[in-house]
Length: 226
Image (tube, rainbow, N blue to C red; front, side, top):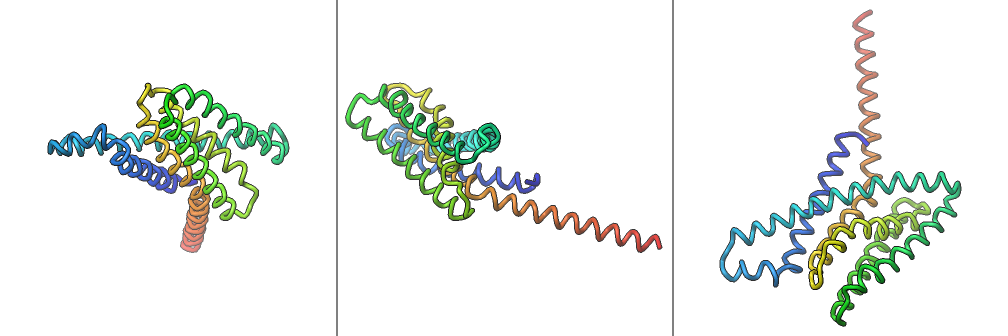
């Protein structure tokens, strides 16, 4: 990918993460954050809160992009180690299962004290699975290749690893960030997985055009020399 297209890719991912976090914060953090400032007419605090969550979304976007490029490296290493894409896919499926079990038993269960807590965690798990499956299916349709398992692995396992930031720092009753940060991570990861080939293709076109211009310039210089 060329520097220019990478910058566009990076900027668009940042905008997606920031905008989704800002918008979803209005719903998820309304009662415990926005409502007081809104009712008291404290507009500076109200809009500064939105800006804070947008910046938080930018940060999560950067983390998601780091996770994406790390996965691309891990995926290639996995293929080289197991020397079989089929075997590597089975390993990825096993890791997906382990990740989901770990998520439920060690990230959700210790904080699920009521039926309402369990309901929230089940909904979040379903959002993670539904978003991951939908993205993986769309990726398979776009590429016409056997990428369903790698796409599921990235969307479930890598997103969960990135999500651990919120899962680790929370306290009892503090699930607002756990809920909020799932959405920008899912959105940015889906964007990266689905759109990266477009930017790679555009980079190839740009390099081809640049090479053609260089050839034309060399021919023009050669004709002038004659």
